[in-house]
Length: 633
Image (cartoon, rainbow, N blue to C red):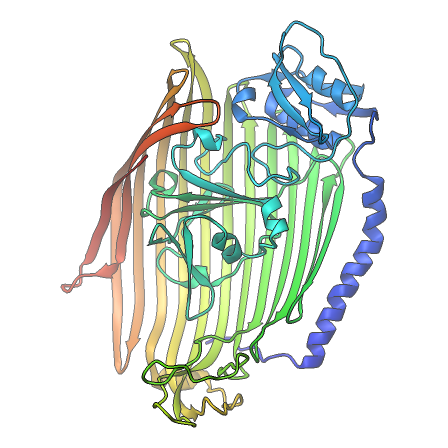
C-alpha cells in the first residue's frame, strides 16, 4: 500500500552534503565570472535599448530591468497611459525622460541611487538630466529585486491594485523578506504573516488558521484557485519550498469572490518568479545548527538578442538534522520557466516545478506521567522507531497568456496542474506513564499513509478602464474552474511490541502492510472528487476623487462525491456522499474613502458559501452548505 524508504546510513548523509557543496562550488566557479561581467551599469554609462511601445507600466518595467535601475511608483500613476518605447543609445536618466515624454510624469533620482515616479512640476518644460548610480529593477507588483518589504500592487483580487485600494486585509510577504529571514517553506512564511496561526498536524506539516478559522481549499497559484486541503489533511502536510516564488499574498477574511466555495478564513496566492529582461545569476549558501545546510542557484535572462524570449531556472537543495535523535530531512527543488513575447502586446508564460522531500520524522511528541507531570527525559529523546519515513513528491505545471488590447483593456488566461504524492510509515508511543514509574510498558501505534492528489485549475478574466461622468472606472469580468481528486489510504494499528520510554528500543520491527489489513483501528481508503466552476464580475466606480464604490458578485456551480471506507475499531463503514449546488450567488460590496495620500477608510460586505458534501446527518443525507455574511471596516 505504501512505499517505505529505509533511513540512509550516516556515510551516505556525509556524501550528500559533500555532493551538495561540490555542486554549489562548481556552479559558483562557472557562473560568478559571468555574473560579474553582467553587473549593473556604471555611473554615467550609455547603453543600447530596443523596447517596443506598449502600456507605460510595462515599458517602464522593461527599461528599469534592462538598465538595472530601481523605480518606485503607484499603479494608479501609470494606469491608462502608453509609451512609444525606447530605441537607441541612452543613459538611464535620459531613457526615463524619453519614455515618460508627454505623460506629465518624471523619474526623480533619490540619494540611494533609486528613482521615484512623480508628477512633473511643469509638463511642458524640459527635464534636467543628471548622472546617478543604479542598483536594482522596477518596484511594482513584482517584489524581486525591489529591496522592499512591501509592494506597489497586489494581484490576489484580480487586476493590479495597491494595498490602499484593496478593501480587505491583505499582507504581502516579499522576496526581500523571504531572503532576509530565510523563510524557505510555506509554513515559515505563514508563521510570519500577521493574523495567521499554525497548528502542528500529528502526521507532519501544519494547519493554517486565519482569524480563528482553518484555511481549507483557499490556495491560488498565479491567481488560479485550487482545491488543495479543502476536504482532507493531505495538502497541508506538504511543506512546499519558496525558492521559485516572487511573493506570497495573504488575504484574511471572506474570499468567496475569488473562488466561490470558501469560508471566513481567507486565501493565499503564490506568485512565481519569471524570466527577467537582463541576465542574472545568484548563488546562495547557508549553514546552521544541527547540520542544516542549504544551497541554491537562481539564474535567468533573455534567450535571444531581442529579449522576446526569457528564461528562468532555480535549483535548491537542503539537508538537515535536528536536536532530537533519529530525525533528518532532505529537500530538492527544481524550477524552470519561459516567457515568450508573441507580439508587443501578447506574452505567453510556461513553467514547471518539481519538489521532493525525503525525511525521517519524529512525530507524536513525548508522553507524561498520568498526573501530567514531566518525565524528565533528555531533550534529545525521540521515541519513534528507526524505520520512520516520509517521502513527498510534487510536480506542478504552470501556463498563462496575457494580452493588452489597448491602453485600457487587457486579458489574462492562466492554468495550473499539480500532482502530489506522499508515502509515510512511522510508529510512536501512546499513553501516559504511571506516576513514580522508572520503566514503562507503553503502547506503540504504527501508521501507514499513501496519499495521491491531483488538482487542476483555470482562470480567465478581462480587466478594463472606462470614462464616465468625468471619472475613470474599472470593470473586471471573468470565469474560473477547479477540479480535485484524492485517492488516499491510511491505517493506524497497535503494534504487538511495547516501548520502555526510559530506555527506548529504536528497532521495533516494522510490520508488513498486511498487518494493517487485520489490525487497523482507524483509517481506510479515501476517494473524493470535487469540481467547481463559476463566473464573476467586479465594478469599481469612482464616485468622487476621494470616494470609490466596489460592487461584485460570483455565481458558482459545485459538486463533490465521497466514496470511501472508514475503519474504526472493528467497524467498517462505507461512505457514499454526494453534494451538488447550482447557481450559488456570492455578492461583495465595499466603500473606500481616501483620507489623504496615504490613508484610506473602508467598509466591506461579503457572503460566504461553504459546501459540506463530505459530511452527513444521522439519516445519511449530505449536509447543506454553510451560508453567511461577513462585514469589515
